Image 1 (tube, rainbow, N blue to C red):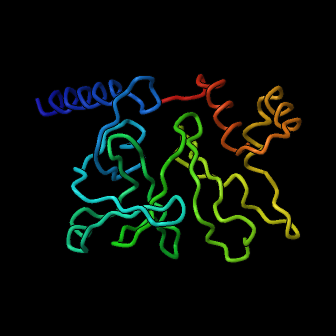
Image 2 (image 1 turned 180 degrees about the vertical axis):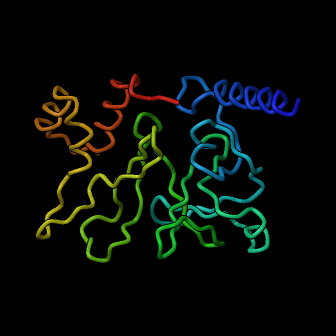
Length: 203
């Protein structure tokens, strides 16, 4: 009897998981709240209410949550949050590279959500002096965060991660190499790639 109950419970959990909608789906209303994990973001299912003021730092794509240490200890580490319109990712890490959450933790607004989710963040490497903000993407399938323009080679930046993504579409890569516009080409071509390759997204 216990085995049957366990099987039925597992089946119910699987059905609920499979019925969840991905946050990249068209026309989806964003759920307001705090994401404890990447999967909560991926499935538009924040598990903690967002009852805190969002404070924008004067310069740049940096935001804080106005929250005291007692509530932070209660909530624990978080991946990010959504105010119902925009999504913000926690970019505060400890020395071992694990995400942490403190009163002064910095969050960056995600500018584009798709196969690769795009955001800008301040460089943590003091040797990178020629760009105030660095372009990052989140691989929607894995949750991995990739800097598009962070690898130094004799003081020149290689576009390795960007090239790895965009060059998978030879036509798009050729367009990029010919593009002389002054706009943010990282964002432009990440969006174009993501829109052309929605079939790459999986649960």
